[in-house]
Length: 468
Image 1 (cartoon, rainbow, N blue to C red):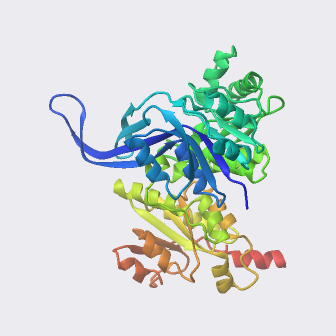
Image 2 (cartoon, helix red, strand yellow; image 1 turned 120 degrees about the vertical axis):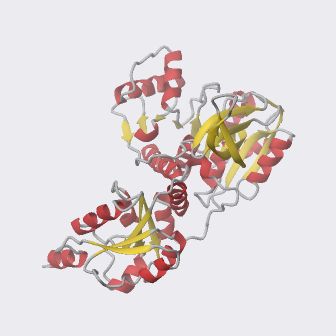
């Protein structure tokens, strides 16, 4: 049996109050928010643990102080069936963060609950979990958990690698920590407090701060997360490694740091080296934000542990949840959803021209690609030349592709029925013909269209030429 990932830190309760606003109040220049819906989710270390559990078959254990109040009861219910909770007795009310959001924009955040907790002592069972974990992730939200002597002693005795996600009001990471993951602002603040005031936001300045933090804390490595710029990894000497992020826009970045830390810890638990863990973490954080961030978290969502490997690899990159969030955003703003499909085995100029033209028909483009088994049925046993996971990664690297969906059937009818795009676009010599997918589109009022195709380019022709 594989050892678990253990998350240690401060569990919070997050509540989004989401409504709409179309007018200002008569007595003050403030919006009148109507139709407010409360959406509850785990926060802090609890969110980190849930995100980790949703992306691995490895057991995830959360060790966190738990109060005896209504907030803690709600939090326990949200964690039930997702992670194994080992509560630490504590005094102090549960910290609750409430965000008032109008559509996709936060207007104000209201925090309640005690600013710090008083632990009643780390249970022996919790110390044993930390000691025997495949990896330990310390998720510090500045409430005093990581400053407790018995917690620090247990983490120092951990046999697996330790990842420490720090907080400005939290304790310093332990010298035994393999990887510390501050964001850019946190790194600048701690470096300045340590006497290293480096001006600027360029990579040279970030690298200098990371080196200073390694000297200050005595840790193995520091990965400074830089939002849309990715992350910079430093070991304290030599050239740092920079991992760029996949550009995403218009999404909620809340929780991206938790997704980053969770993915890094899971990668180290699986035996990855630090650089590989940071690369996986950047990809996971980008996918999390693209899927809507913390605001898209749904209480009823349950990961699919038995999904086949091919589809699981593709969902790690684009994701059904990411596509659903994309559709919701585009439709909420009255935009047009465009879809196209094919095998896309060996991407060539004809594909690129068609995809670019399809994206111009609306506000987002979803590419539906045949799974490997579906391609074999259509093209023969020698195809595909490129796996579905890699085809999806190449397609999503194109600036005019917003999401990729993989389907197992011989036709995309089933995935189209789920996505229900406004437009289905195909490239090729179909002018005047009734596209096979047109009948499906008509059931919800969608339109199938034909786009000009760049003649003389096809995967089959490329393969034949390469064989000759």
